[in-house]
Image (cartoon, rainbow, N blue to C red; front, side, top):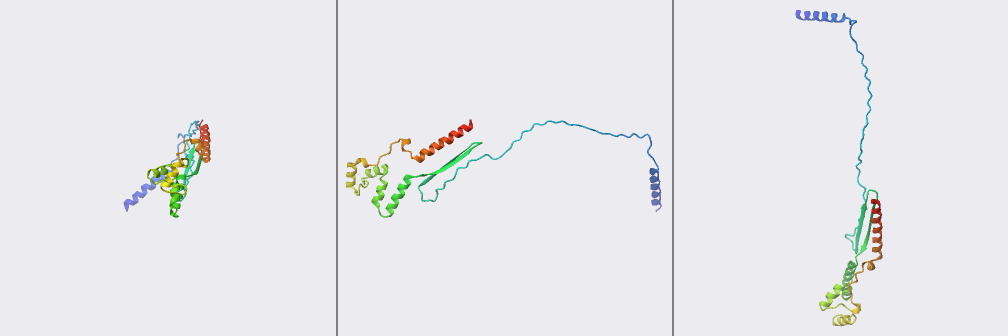
Length: 189
């Protein structure tokens, strides 16, 4: 306890000594004000990453349908202009096969064979097999004699004049495609 009392007296003595001191007059006091101006020039490049423009070709669904059509579509895209188009085209061979099958299913077997004989390949195969295609209701040897006598009615391979034999739809499609291609070519220049 005596020890604690001695410690308390020393603390009081230190506290009163520090309160009684005043700052001397000769203390150096410094005031500092900094003013600075910064001029800076920066060159920057901004790159905007965005998805590219896209021309999406239309989907023409012909799956699981009993139609004899084929879908054709396409698209072209530049940075400025995108064009897409699509259409359906009739498949004449498919129509011929469906017609022949329908006739056969209805019991008209000779008519079904006649439809198939419109194809020169089928006509030649039937003649080579000794079972000529029907001719005006005649079958067998009578039909063969009639086909030989009237060879002008035999189906022939079409002449290969692409422009003349082209359907008007195909011609207009090619013309439109050429126009679009020319337009895109001009845009690239």
